[in-house]
Amino acid sequence: MIWDINIRIFHFLLIFFIIFTIVTAKLDLLFFHQFLGSSLLGLIIFRIYWGIFGPHYSKFKNFFYSFNDVKLFLKGNDVSKGGHNVLGSWSIFSFYFVIVVLSVSGLFSSDDVIFDGLLAFITPSLTSIWTKAHNIFHYIIYFLIFLHILAVLIYQFIKKKSIINQMIDGQSRDKNIEIHIIPKSSIYIGFIVLIMCTFLPPLIVYINIY
Image (cartoon, rainbow, N blue to C red):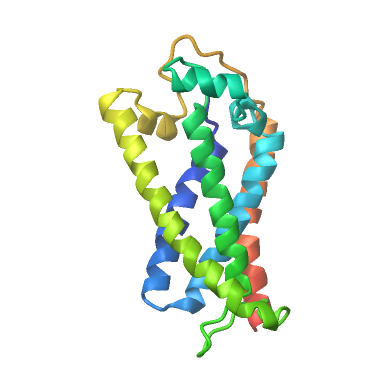
């Protein structure tokens, strides 16, 4: 197994919250939008934690490639470390960065009508900048979603890598990949952290509203 249960739950929660964050924004359901956005920020916090303390293939140190690796990859060589290849790593970090920018800027944004972000009162002179950044980056995440879906379809159906299957069952289809044992205690702790990071941020938002 290369993808543990926590990273798979994280992945599907991320998809769920991104979809419904977009839907609530488009429907002007900003009251619900702020809770979903805060959960997204919490998920990224969990991913940072899991990228440091999680199993081998979840660790960020295995996502970094040298300049020479990148050159070899661009020439068609396989320099994958068993998890994500060069493009996959870039995609992951781009997604996380954009989500953080959207989540944080949303907290300080305002629609200048009836809704203010939870922390908009802290930097009133910068509210327009935060709001503009939030609006710009939501187009960027659309672009990243399109690229991600396109890449998944290519690897799943053209290159026959079965990456969708891997994210569902966690099992690599590469027989040459090195398998690392994942301690159950680590998984249990990670699951608790994942739940806390997912639901604690919206709870904090709710408490501060009421």
